[in-house]
Image (tube, rainbow, N blue to C red):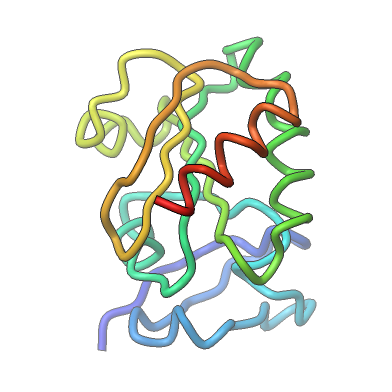
Length: 144
């Protein structure tokens, strides 16, 4: 049984999750908050493949802490994640800390937002968007 570690988006506690239990809505062992719902999840090389296998669509924000548009877009991404809790999984990947993932997904500019369904990329958009435009793009991407 393979596992990966992920931080709780609520208390930042580290949790070990078996790959085959990702779709069972695991909760944090410390605070009991859902690990994969309502807030963006920190994507890493160790958990990203398992997160993409979700039955829910997955939206990924490739960003960096030094990028002003990325930092400005973060609250929009979090608000939309909260609004789609239970329907869509939201993941943030720091391209500085996860350079291999950025390379694998051919990230050339940030922020880059990708939508995945059944583990396959269905759409991508570059640049920070206002909430209304991001929500519209997301709706169209998920319905492809």
